[in-house]
Structures are given as C-alpha cells and as structure tokens.
Length: 307
Image (cartoon, rainbow, N blue to C red; front, side, top):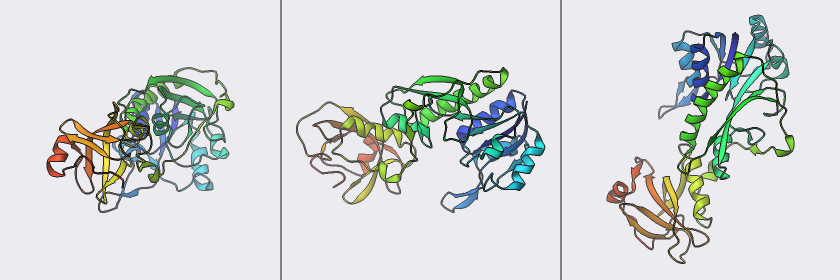
C-alpha cells in the first residue's frame, strides 16, 4: 500500500520500520520538529526522523496539520492510508478524510481503557494486570474511534514504563502490518467504560511516604525512566529506580529508614507497610545498586526521607 506515516518517538519508529520491511510504499513521513535535548540543548531529530533518513524516506516536520500547505501536499499523494503512532499533533478532520482507507492509529492500551497521552504509565500506576495494543480507525475524538485489531499483554510485577513500552512497541509494529493485510470490521468502543490517561506531571513523581508501599512501588515503576520517582535525603534530591513492597516490620513514621544494607534500603510507608529500594541515584550521580550507592552515600536507620 501507499502510506503516509506520522509519528515521533521510538514507539513509532518501531512501526515505521515494520511497515517498510513489509514492503509498503512510504510516500511521506511526518514527525515533530527537532527539539532541544542533551546538556547542550542542541536541536535533536526525533527517532522517527532519524530512521526515515536512514531509510531515505521523505520527511516533513510541520508545526501543525491545520495549515493548507501541508493538507494540499498530503492530498496530492493520494495515499491508501495514513498510519499514526505517538505523533503528538492533532490530526484534523480534513486530514482524516484524505486517505482512501482513512487514518489508522497505534494506541498503547486496550481501548476504551486509557485513552489519552500516557496510557503505559497510567496502567502501571493503577495496578492493571493487563494492557495491550489497539489498532484504531481514527475519528475526530480523542482515541474514540472503532478498533480494528487488538492484542493484550500481562503487566509483570517488575515491569517498568520502559520495559512495557518496548514490549508494546513490538506488538504495535506487528499488529499494524497485520491490520493492513486484509479488510477488517471496525468494532465501536464502549464509551461507558472509557478512562483517561492524562499527561504526566513531574509533581506526580514526588513520593508521598504516607501512601502504602505497593502504591509507591508502582509509582517507581511507572516513572522509570521518565521523570524518575523522587524524594529527598538531608535536603538533597534522591531518585528511586527500583523498589518493591516488603513485609511490615512494625510501626514507624512514614519515610523512616528502617535498615540499609547490601540487599537494599528498607523504608517505612503508610499503613505500616515497607518499601525495599534496590536502585538509587543522587542528583548529578549515576544510577547505582543499593550496595554501591551506600558505599559512597551512607543512609542510616532512623533517618527520614522526604522530610
């Protein structure tokens, strides 16, 4: 098929690569403008742009798809379909109507569960046992279109946003190729069961030690790798990258360090629960296993985190 592809991060790049490998003709790749990144804040191309250039595919980076110029360019292509994956720009109705088969979205949840910007992180934060990929026929709503194809995956107890992202990206890349192989009947979503995956706010990553350990452990997993669950120790920022709920060891003020050793740092949480932290990072430092971290930055029983 003759396709237009619209996407920006690694999640989308996996799908672009799969479509190219499957032999589809990618007439144009749309991705967001280069953004400042790294310590030097130099303009950096998206993962999709880098791949498109490596595959020698034409790339456009409009600020909006509402401009007549880009709409005329898309119309002239007469594409069979437009594939959208984590693009980050609104696709207006005028563009949705252009391809013969419309616009098809790769969404990282089992719709109508977790419509919106952060479905992977929200699924982990909520304690969902499963999630998946939905291949959706796009309409003007926010992830409201009928579903063409879907596949679920179990959220493992040690899944982080990164590991789950990588698994879902691979599933999405495979499913979108499958979706184009034959005509499928779109299945309307049950709007009454819809939930909204709001964009992440860095403030959410600050640990409230009064919450139960299981809730905090999910927060650590959901915010790994971005922005990282954080607390403070002696007034300095401290990020937690791996942690698990542990057995209660008695009543202590939430945030109190109960013990710190080679196996991890045990911290009191709400409801007499405890969290064992096994990977930490000080501001400006590296992520370190607890044993290596403690060798250079001791934490002592009785001290409080987040105080």
